[in-house]
Amino acid sequence: MYLCSMKQDFYCPDGKTALLISGGVDSAVATHIMVERGIKPHLFYIKIGMDGEDSSCTSEEDIEISQAIARQYHLPLDVIDLQQEYWDRVVGYVINRVKNGLTPNSDVMCNKLVKFGAFEEKVGKDFDYIVTGHYARTWKDTDGQLWLLSGIDPVKDQTDFLAQLDSLQISKCIFPVGGLPKSEVRRIAEEQHLLCAHRKDSQGICFLGKINYNQFISRFLGEKEGDIIDIDTSKVLGKHKGYWFHTIGQRKGLRLGGGPWFVVKKDIANNILYVANGYDTRLQYGNSFHLADFHVLTANPLSTEHSNDIRFKIRHTEQPIAGKMTYTPQGWFIESSELIQGIAPGQFGVIYDAEGQRCIGSGEIAPKE
Figure 1: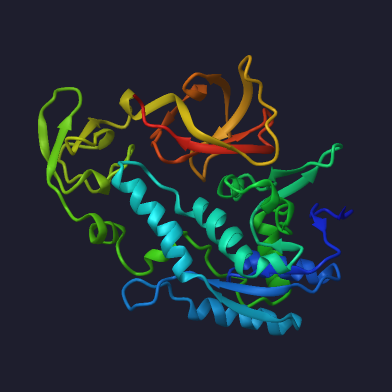
Figure 2: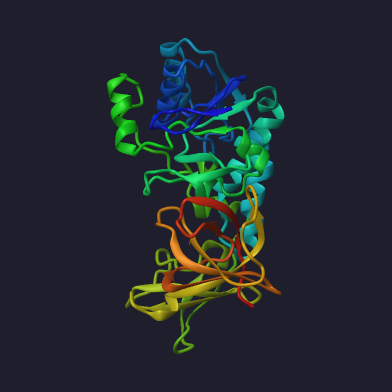
């Protein structure tokens, strides 16, 4: 494996290469770049939407576009059905977390358990490398360790979606578009007349398909009426249909007058939502949290003896935030001088080095005691 001398800055393989194609522009351009560099990957479309009129993803168009890309570049394409694995591993995880009052991240677990998990077990094990259209990069240090790096487009960077992978999974990854801004990816797609050049980006949570998220959760957990209480006055303002339909920082769906109202606390045992009024309420914000079960990607450079300068994300769209990470008897503790809106237990805190480039690992944000 060697580092290509090109602006895309990704490792070029000598062995058998599989490419996960989705029907979107990113994986299509990844296909083009690989072929342009003389590599002929075997394309695989992973089907994960559940069958059924009300709950499945519309995969027909995705597959048709993937087939067109395969024909354009004279590459083999197979459709791999991982619907049951997705249901068992990812949907099961979502329901378990929601039931416990947490905020799950299905996209993170889909990558870990399905795209780089179940796929590896069924097909990927027969290939030396797995190529995807993620906005991320890899870098090998002088000790030969391969690290996950942020994509150069700060808005599209997807290392947070990959931060639960293990070192073996990372060692097989190739990310051809990670060294490009999204605008350049679109330009290449247009220049190469790719069928998906102007297709919108996917929004995740594919298993929901056409159905409403609350309807999906209700199917498994039902409804249970509870109080909505003003945390400042202790006044009951209204009713909700179950704490599992709401997350910390949420505004929509409360059906309260005189807003805006935001969920700031959940009493799981008593099925109570606590809310605060106003965009500037301090209760919406925090600046610290603990991580449960911190997962390291490659190696852990963090000291347990003193605090570490880091950057971190708690949601996908944000830039990494500067902070300190300290080891305590309760686990890793993250603190920032910045106030952060909607720190939701169950979401992933993704940890980077002080420059915000090298992804060290991630862990679930733990509930406050």
